[in-house]
Length: 137
Length: 205
Image (cartoon, rainbow over all chains, first blue to last red; front, side, top):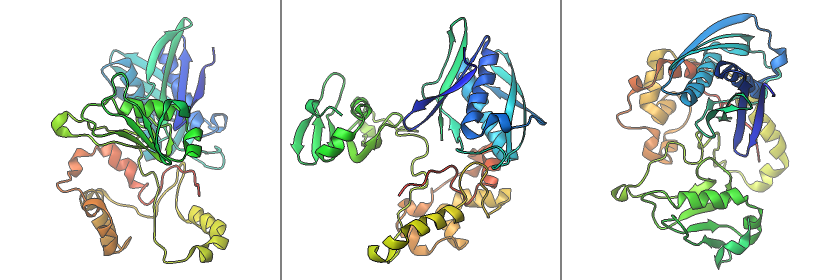
């Protein structure tokens, strides 16, 4: 199973994270998200931040998680490449690593403005979990 | 799009007849050539919009219609609140008018045409856009609140436009009773460095 991938959606781009657990699928979805914006392999994980979000169900939690990351990236001008996710009921705590955005070094292409509810799903698939949605670029 | 399922009203108007849960027909304003080039998704989305509560007359698609989120991009519909009409937060998507501007230059096409490519390059160089772009305008939190309340009038006062510009904007580009406290601190912090930028962008001409 591929850890993360993007898929075509005519107006925007879909992102998908797969994992053995929901947490891993969410962490991989975050990698898919940043892979849309930058070349992930060029992001050195030297700065660590925490993101905490809450939502009534796990689909909405995925959107909150991704939008929480985007807000943090925007405010602090950071890009992230490593993600650890801990989910406890309606709460998610993410520990993320990255570095200040360098448009040249990171081969920045397109900016994601937000994760959306479009094609939003968190489902069991192939004995693991798959978390996906369309992101607004 | 398969043109055989459409009724031709005239050279530039095609109808998707009412079927199933459609409350009104669908209408596409386009030449035969444009309709043939349109995605099948446009027909599907126009049909879906025609099912929404309170829709009036027709679910319409303009000549540029292409696949969006709920509506196709280029989709037009009017809803009557008296008939339970809906309000959609993101009909065609979530960034309507993403950097699309029409400006009157007072110059003729002949004068501009030979320099069009250089002009576009200049736009690209001068307008901050894309990942990590930063504007030249830095506002503190009190100024952000003033901007949120003042809208386009605020921008004109600061010299980013002329008062005539306001005449061409709905409600003069200002929402009466706007409450900056309704915007989260996170959202304001995001705005801080993005004033005067276009966000992400694909230039097309």
